[in-house]
Length: 274
Image (cartoon, rainbow, N blue to C red; front, side):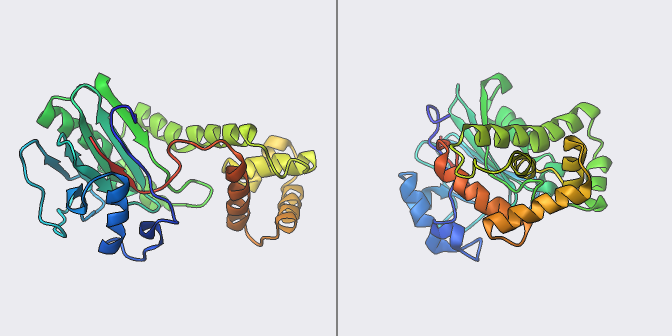
């Protein structure tokens, strides 16, 4: 994608990642500098967890600095304009039409996914610029995973009410569960694991925890009792000096990421530039 559009995802060390406010104006010059544009050339949004799109065509003016349209999708074909969405748990999506040079940045939380924000972005690119789906490249940025975030039946009901087809449900499952699990296992396999001296059963349990499996699922897969798996998890907590699953995943993930080959998209907000 870098061949067609400069892009980045910010991480916690950036001021944007450390800010307690989504609208901390002082955090954005750092992003603008990284994208080689002036701060007023950042096309930002006041995000509302929906599927409204704002488009900027060649010759159009951007809003005055500090004026943010209410939307969750921004699309443009203007050179020298950087598109930006801000996420924490939600999914940042970048799209680029490699034929026409049209770019889109999408903020997609669960409400935005129910509202089909990514689909809306593709449809608006097609309607406003003539984008063909065969020409699209899409990058999905870092977002919260099943290991750390549970939803209640009210969220599932929202998706069911929107009448997603069985194939769409399978696609959602693929993106949110299977691909994430495959990526984590591949990353673990490729990393020079600083904790490779773990006993085999502890190592298997840790790998399954990193893949998002519950203790019940691990017990079933390894054909062991849940009590035994729970004891393995307690042993892992003691081994790594943590007191919760979240702390364990964070600590192990940090150690392994420092040893693993760096990915080109290894961060967490989402500006893109056509």
